[in-house]
Image (cartoon, rainbow over all chains, first blue to last red; front, side):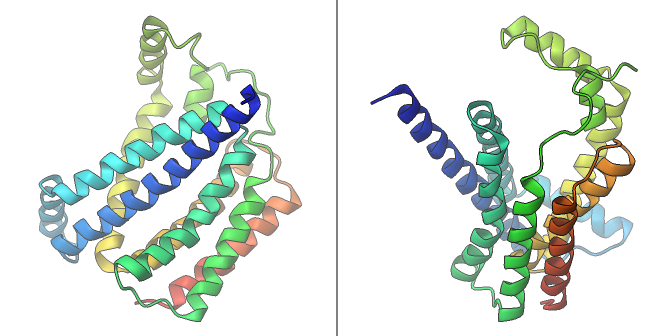
Length: 141
Length: 104
């Protein structure tokens, strides 16, 4: 197996793991907040919610997966161009919506699906531009 | 965070001492100190939104950060934004509006 082929498989695996971690992370956060309940917008309500999230294992599991996503993302972009990795982030919005329907039994109507498709397409367009169009030298304070 | 990290620059290598020096520089940057609580507030805001609305509304709607990021990049970081990127921003805006209108 050539070096390029190995790198391609390695990168694709990392991107897939990145998507899995991001989706599972958000799913766990939602599950955790369903356990905690709707946050009341008042000083006491927000403080109570903050304490509840700190003590909720599902929320911590979500944070664990999101940290995993960050590490996978940093690894993937160190191996491949951002333009290769970014579409996974765009399609992640659609995958997350599908998982919400299947695993959380959320009702998603046609209008919301159209919105999601527009978002995915828009994010792909935004991501196709170069990561930086300014001087790449460090900015001196 | 972008502005602060561009001031910090990149790590010289991935050796432990080089990474520690890089982290030391980052934590001494005032813009990073502004960014960290803002990022924490952003995460906590996400949790609050998730307690109110379905995941299939909140996560797609969070794509609006690409819109805010593009305006920030143009006006704060002075980046050039292409027509293609503006078109993407417009599509994200319409998509997020449609998602939010479906509500609960």
